[in-house]
Length: 389
Image (cartoon, rainbow, N blue to C red):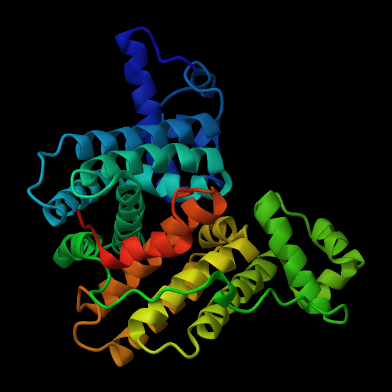
């Protein structure tokens, strides 16, 4: 809908936006209705539709406001003297805006799971603004790769500390993200590989594995329809069984979602272990972990949506997936890394950055077909080696 032409209408629209952000942050987007928003704003329900056609439209408006504020903050930064100072300033601007607009950030995180257009519309312009800052220190295609990787680090820091932990972001986080962006993940030689060495092909479920077939069907239906739109009957039909078979394996749809989440976690961890077998260094292990993640996303294209929705269905599932991987990741880095392997020594921040980079690069590269001027070796080499003129 077009924005109001009068100052009074603009104020009312802004009141609805502020109220919706608070309601979404408290109840979640899926569980909130137009009546909830209007009650919080002190307006009659009918008044809502003078400004927004639907709840989805107000979510998009919130995301758009947050995106525009982030782009303005990044674009207004004074020019840095080098890439690390530039990345540090970007990190500071990102954390400042997100910290002030937590309601909008939380709403964005839930909504983007099922709306690829919203997600592209949010991250594309923001990554473009960041890449524009970094382009003074490297060529355009590498600046784009570094921008998405940097955003991944910042995004995961914000989610972990501000959203999940409800704490302030550690003072060292901005500097860690900036150093990894500018100096690269490591000074060690980047491990090149041939495409044929990518790893094992997808394992198929045997016809006799009823639970495996049911979980695979649930993964597809949850991913395609969303958790709330998925029906038990569709899951069993997709698996090729009678409807009652579902309850031989799951007590409820929520339990099926939990088992799908754990199945995805084990598939990702297993693939990373398989790909890194025989690696001669921790740096090589991390390079193969990125490659394993990219192939995992190809094999499980609905994984992003399922994991994001699962978090809002049951908060503990976020910890069962991301928290579990993060703790194991940080512990392995601490046990097996040697001094000088990576550009930062804080294994917790490093693990979060690696997960965030993989998240953003995988989404852009695998799901959206981005970075087509670079093959995967070139893309990862840019991230590992840092910004060079």
